Length: 239
Image 1 (cartoon, rainbow, N blue to C red):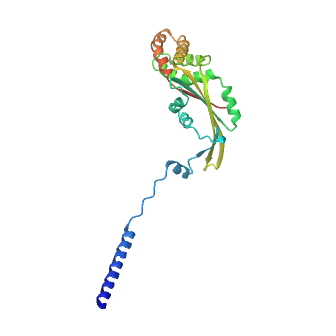
Image 2: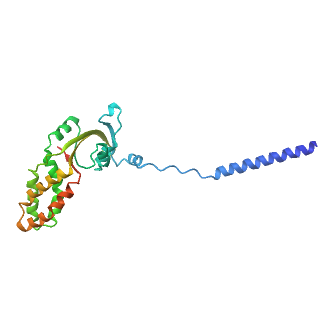
Image 3: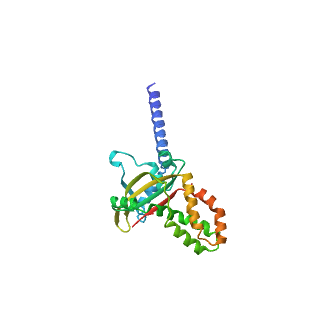
């Protein structure tokens, strides 16, 4: 009986050793888990050739407010969240933006900007491309559009809100660190009113065309005014 017990114990020990060896071998053969891919932001930060931009301050941050999503979207000319936030889905947006190292100075630039000229300048390229594509005297077309932009009136835009953010730009190649403010003001206007203003603006341009080009421009003016009245615009003021 004692001999039988000793044999049984030896068998159990042998099984345990075999089991441990198998487990150890499996552990050694199991490939390590793949490391998660770095996010794009981290990769950019790791590349010294790409300047890094970090937002270090913004309007209302001192009061614990988060960076608003609508502002970040609007910087990319996406105004969907802006229109939802400020309940102006049926309005057209004009964004005017300025950058500089002094917050008060940039704000002053925007406040004193020739507002009508900024809007007309934003429209100028669009109108020029549209008219120049069908009119014969392109040089005269360009001159007429430019002349009209200097005296255009777009009364009816209302300031909706403004925002600013302070950014730190780190250039590891040039070994420079620059802080600058990005100040943005947002204006809205009723689309129907804006369409009337645009029709008047286009009429001012068209009257200086040659007679043949006038007829072509007049035929497309109404559709162009309607289209532009729903086109959100942006302009940047710099010194």
